[in-house]
Image (cartoon, rainbow, N blue to C red):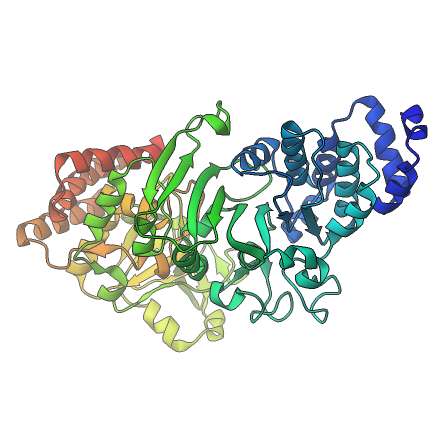
Length: 559
């Protein structure tokens, strides 16, 4: 390596352009030990304190994902490309590799990167310099194109790393904007007015409720793209169906063509959540436009060999959710289940809410009754049809809450475990004594015994579990909150045939009086039969639902 340095008179000037001489020399010397160029960045990203990474939403992107995304893009050395959260440059390095494979003399002047972490930017510059062979023209390129800055903020009063895109890259916007925006933006919740200005860029059209940095990065990406440009990001799968992303989905579905959605599942080991690759085009869609969907079906195979499906974008627009399945029949069955039904929330006048926000380990909560205490139920105390255990709360603590909330909790109701998992399905019981509940419980206030038992029957059916697992939570294998914005959308046949209603209520009565789990599972199978009749499903639809639910639910929880 030493001899090679001496043969390059521009070597030291390039090192200065990188911005950290000591780091550059250490890393370059390490290459003598055959360390892969890309591993320089990987080592940095992996070495970040886990808490710091979580706080900043920074995660290492597996090489296979980077390679796949770059392979999806049509690129030559005239293509204007930006990674607005470039980290240590893994996407940019693969783009350079792709350009070199096409043309060994390709230039890289149209490749850009921005990141707010100065060390990451220095490593990106260094990695590119090594990849490109320390060419003299890199000096200006590295300083001008790979920049330190906060991509989603333009105002200095919010962040001294605010990045003014048109001023920093005037040559790009003179050409109309970038052709491609690519990357793995941070997933972290931001504070309005402290971390960003909602009136900047497209943000006000995209945000609702808690704001994730990924939403703003998509907004910024679309803003800096030229018409017809492509955005390709790794994103949280929750973007496809969670309520807080609903305005973002609406904007994307109305204003962009969704080119591809790739469900990566739990591809990142350190991230608490499932990921997708989303590729979109800044171009107005038409209803029949088909989205390519890919889902990891065989983990032993490369991303390149996972199956492909086509879904009309119009299907997503219908309910403002990007539900992605490997079987088109799921969409039609979900539509049939919903069609002509009444949403549960409407049926119960919106009275679906969590219990009291008191920690389960609070000193006010005890396992034994004491003076001035009252029964209170926590989520894990609920099983199918049953309340297994009870706790007690000191009544003095109740003065912290509105009397109206306490009084409404003391009514008859259906209670559910608030944490929903596809592995166990809906877990609900009937509280006809009006117990208080903690906020790990979702309460559905229904004072009519017959209606309550009918709803309890539906909640424990495979049909409604199918709807919740696939129609509400997009076949997620992680836990979700069973809050009103989700379970309130459960479609209910409001006036079933009398004989079906009577059977449903009788089965629930049987389950409420049964204590043996095996016998309860037998009753659940009877409930399934009657609910399929209530919703008028045929045998092929029933078989599909049975298989679909069994794909997600654990063997222990099956019935």
